[in-house]
Length: 395
Ligand SMILES: Nc1nc2c(ncn2[C@@H]2O[C@H](COP(=O)(O)OP(=O)(O)OP(=O)(O)O)[C@@H](O)[C@H]2O)c(=O)[nH]1
Ligand SMILES: [Mg+2]
Image (cartoon, rainbow, N blue to C red; front, side, top):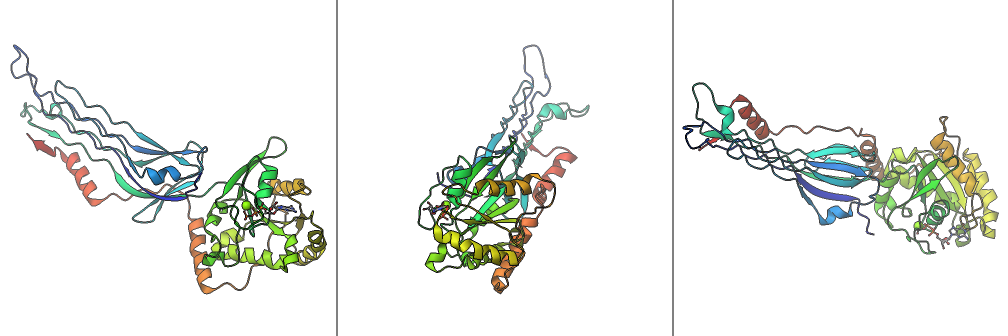
């Protein structure tokens, strides 16, 4: 299935129905009085967070979401029917932004959470509401109010507890397939994983957590190399990162410490929030003899930085329980994480990368509160007119 994590859509609440101008006419009832009913209210567009959805793909094909209009008022004191609300399901972790201002309006991060994206307009009053002692036959009624209309940008940031990071081919997808029932594609060429995958890990004592496998990072990802670092947004909300380092790379002349630093450099370039997350450093592919030989050297170098290294072989499963325990310790224990946490910040960030990181960090820190839209002047004017009395169509 195609993975889409950013879309632009238009939402509109239904217009309120107009009030009716009508008079009672019956045999032997002369001048029966006004009997125009009220218009029905327009339906609203309501977003509901749904844990079953994982992509915004549907919104690529359906970009306009218009709720039903209210029915106009009728004669014989009959009110118009209200328009039905339109319920739009969005994946858990969807952020909604106002397209014109760029303001974050809501963060739908709880299953079943509802948010009214565009309110429907109120129906107008029929002429039967406007009789007074001196105005017994009002020949006017109120118009319905138009529904709200907005252009919104939806952005998906998957909600996972643990994020997997590392170079391509580090064994991230293999790890996810070993610890969960997720079956991502695994192959011995870089960039096998093109979109994020989620897996649910059933840990001990009925505890479980969600793990996210994202496409591999390479040096210069923040400048767009490889698949870039756009997928890092999906591990931005994780509480702990598992950093897989492929120790078998030494055969190709690569230094695992340099690999480790390169990935952290990319995290730093993306956002300081991400770079400061607790990291569990895992040395992978230890079933291979040259990887096992490299372990002692890598562990010693990391120890000098006060970073603990957990040995693992994703292929044989050796060391898996210890990695899961380390994740669970951060996720479920109230005490501060004691697992290996990166302590050395990379030094040589370019000025552009620093500026980018700053903006990303600010965006990540922004509180996900429901912001209220500022009323538009024309809408306020219309509201006041209605409050003050009748703004009707003379008929
Ligand atoms: N020997 C050995 N091979 C492994 C191990 N883990 C993964 N591999 C192999 O390494 C290759 C890459 O594994 P993936 O799990 O696809 O790596 P990835 O990090 O998801 O790679 P991308 O999706 O490209 O970023 C595959 O051929 C795996 O079979 C391991 O522990 N030992
Ligand atoms: Mg993969």
